[in-house]
Amino acid sequence: MLIFKLLAELLDYPGEALVSDLREFVKSHGGSAPAVAALDPQRVFAATEHAAIAHFVDWMLGEDQTELEANYVKTFDMVPEHSLHLTHHLFGDDKNRGPALIDLSEFYKSYGLQHEEREIPDFLPMMLEFVSQLDVEEARVFLADAARIFQVLASNLESADSPYAALVRIIENHASLARLATA
Image: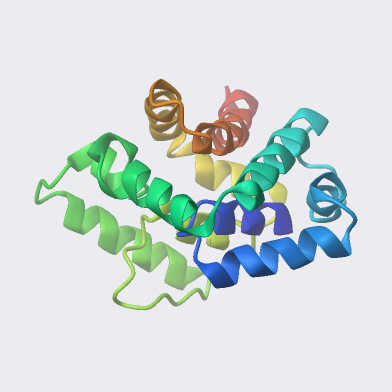
């Protein structure tokens, strides 16, 4: 599901290479809306979600590169309540965070995903990269475990008027769909 891969990229640090690749991708599809739709041929995401992602892409491509990078750092690196390291929202810097990270790494390995040791496995873009390799139901079940974290993170980002909030709400929605299906 390439749409989750796109979300992973959009939530990662917006370096020049990423923005350049995104600009080319959008241009090759005649705009952000058709580009987003092309990554979701099964229409797993609703039209409103496609529109929100396309709006975010347009915002990102319209920003000055330096401002875009500064905004990302200010949003995610300077405010603990906005951390994209999801276990931080559960454990903070508590010693219990370590075993949770080890369990997540082992879970990835059970699917054949190896990540670089310097990368912390609870980093949301990494998790979305993993999810992009799963089928729809597996992806939603995996995300469901963090649904409450997505809700809190999205609310925190909304309180800060961050454009990233819309992306996290979309992820929360897909995590919630799995919870509703099992209720």
